[in-house]
Length: 96
Image 1: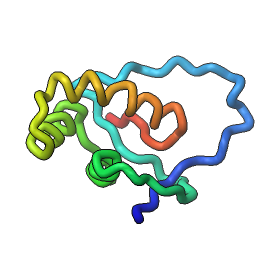
Image 2: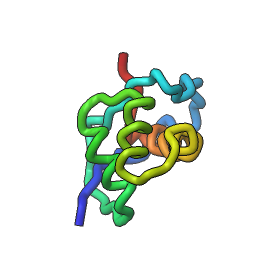
Image 3: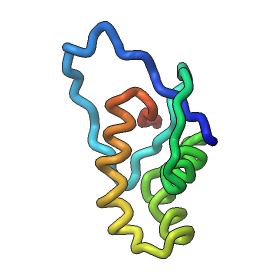
Image 4: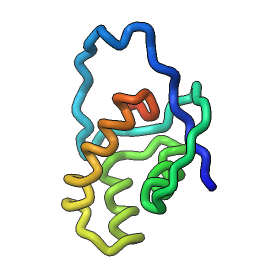
């Protein structure tokens, strides 16, 4: 069983903040103030492990392409909404 962190809901959830889109050159990393939850999906655990260190979106797509045999462009298309959901939950963030 793999444990992944997630943040407690903010008291300011009603305030919308415009976020930059996650693009191929975006640098992504997990956030640092977690509490634990489980992640049962193999690919999700793989992504979560990679994001322990800052990783560019295109590098993440290439690594997943090598591991799972899919085209990086298709992975990017499928991965973007997943990562945006993680970001919306405060699990990952974009870094420079």
